[in-house]
Each structure stands twice: as structure tokens, then as C-alpha cells.
Length: 316
Image 1 (cartoon, rainbow, N blue to C red):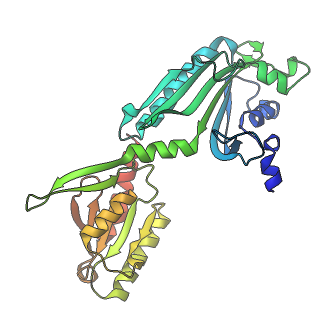
Image 2: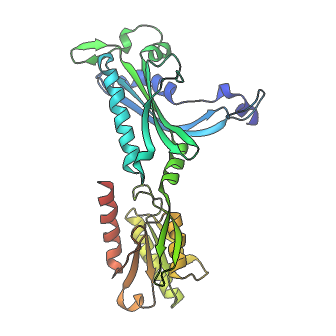
Image 3: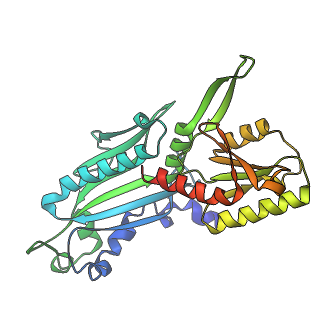
């Protein structure tokens, strides 16, 4: 295995070639009509930056790819369209949208094969780095992949049959995750009741991106009974497609302030706290990560409340 990893020629460096190879089989699915695209996510390998000559293991990178086949007369407009759409997507889920930008590639970094290229960039503290690269590859790559008759490669563009141009959209998922983590981490300053200033770190991930939507925890009280209540709510939330963190399984007791600090740093949207009174009244305390407001509601309403909140945030 190590020998195979050392031989970079046996490893794929991008997802473009696979999509080009699937071009002909895909024509029947779209009735040879333009435009259409093939999307894929997978692991690729690239040389480590700054490595010296000699055998070494390439870096593993998770990439997302869209290969868009369109008419030659509209290829430039499609490149502009996808550049706008991708920049809007990155900014939609960002806490600081201005850190994401778009720029034309003017240094020839994408090689001679691209007639035009655009990059989506994120401004890290150490400088801007590309998250996605969009290229207009023309028809050269397609012709090289499928050598032979040009006629079998043609598609319908209105009433004409044309050889499509290829727009490649390639994103680095690993770097994109890092960008969102950096963009979402905040240090919030707050004054307590005694006018003492303190700071807390909050990972304010967008509700659609937060891996854990709600944490379930409990205060002091009948441990067995409260855990059963937590377990029941946990299963209800998971069945509803809402990811939940079983904090009630932690054997070390923590104050509400300590729990809030922990879950804020984890990026958890809401914390639901069960107490001794929950067993009699069914009431729980729900804390919002972003507003820090604590709201009391009946346990039967928690799933409904979270579902409405998450759906509303996705439609923004």
C-alpha cells in the first residue's frame, strides 16, 4: 500500500477525468440536450507543498466537482453564472460574508487548457486561499478523452447539433470546512450582574451547517428517572432528523454556566436542560446559543420548536 501511495501516477488528482469519461453514457439520460452537468464528491491526492525530490506520500484531499456541458455560444455566460451562484452559496452560510470573494485567474495558474478561470477565495489570517476554481475548458478535454468521431459527441442546442464546451467547478471541501470554522468562531464580550467583563468563545455555525442542533442535559435530581426522560426525547429528535448530543450521559455534574460554555464552543444551537421539576410538570429550559436567552417550554413542544427554527433558517 505504501508503495502505491508513493507512486502518484496511480492516484487520481481530480474528479474531472471521471466525469468526462461518463459523458457518452449520460447522453441518453438527457436526450442529447444541452445544458447538463455531472456532480461528484470524492478523495483525490496531490503532492505535499514544499516537498523535495524523492518518494513521498501525497496529501489526501476531499474534493467536490461539477462538470457542466453547455453550448459554445453560452459557455462564457455559464461560467459567470456558476461563479455568482457559488459565491452566493458560500456567503449565505457565513457569519462574515465579506471574507469570501471572487476573482479572475490572471497568472495562468490553471494552465493553457483553460480559456478563462475564476476562483472563489476565503481571506484567512495568513492570506487569501482558493476554495473553488471554475474553468472554461472549451472542447479540448472532451475530444482528448473520446478520440474518434466528433459526431457521437455532439448534442442538441436548440435546433442545431454542436460539440459542447466544458465548465469545470472544483472545490476543496477540507479547506472549505476550515474556512467556515474560522469564519464562525467568535469571542463575545459580556458584562455580568456585578458589572464584571468576561469573554466567551462561540462557534456560531449557521443552523444548516451545525453538526449538532441540540444538547440534552440534566441538573441534580433523580438520576435514573431524568435519564429516561432524556433518552425518550433524544430518540424523538433523532427520528425527526434532528441531531442531538446526549450530554446527560456525562457522569460529572456541571453548572448551567459550564454547560453553556462547553456547548457554545461546540457550536450547538440549543441546550435543553431537564430538572427535578420536569418529572412533575414536563417543563424544560431551552437555551439559545446565539441570543443566550433561556426559554421554558413543555417537553412535548421541543421537537416542534426545533423543527420550525431549523426550517426557517434554511429558507433565508
